[in-house]
Image 1 (cartoon, helix red, strand yellow):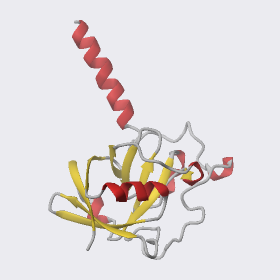
Image 2 (cartoon, helix red, strand yellow; image 1 turned 180 degrees about the horizontal axis):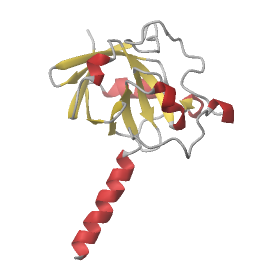
Image 3 (cartoon, helix red, strand yellow; image 1 turned 90 degrees about the vertical axis):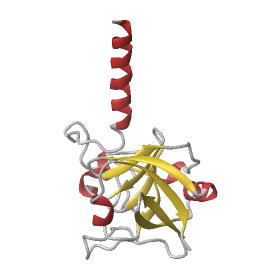
Image 4 (cartoon, helix red, strand yellow; image 1 turned 60 degrees about the vertical axis):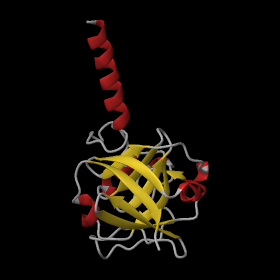
Length: 182
C-alpha cells in the first residue's frame, strides 16, 4: 500500500512538471496580457512576418547557425540565433534531445543552459525554438502564439525554417538528433 501511495505521488509530480511544456490549462487564472503587466513578451523587438500563417512568425536571424533536427526520418530545419543560450547548445552539437508532443509544442527536460535574464520573456511566436528556464525545457513551439503570453520563463534561441505543418503533423515521443546543417 505504501508503494502505491509513493508511486501515485511520483506520477502526479511528474505530470505537474511536464505540464509546463504544453498544457491545455485555462488562462482564466492568469492575465491574458503579460505586456500590460510590464513583462517582456516574445514579439518585443522580434523581426516578424505576418503574411503567411503557414510559416513561422519570427524571421530567422541573418547569419544565424543553421541546424537540422531529426524526428525519426523527418528533418525539421532551423536557425539558431546568437544568444548565450543558443551558443551553449551549438557547442554541444550534435546533440540528442528527448521530446514529447503536447498541444502546441514538442518539449522535453534538458540540461541546464546559461542564459541572460534580460532575454527571458513571456510567450512565443509560432515556429520558435525556446529554452524554458524554469525546468529547464527545450521546446519547439508551433501554434497558439496568441494564447502564449501566460507562459513565462522563455528564452528564444531560434526558429524552424519550414512550414509549421511539417512539425505540427507529427505525434508522439522522439529522441531528436540536432546537428549543424551543411
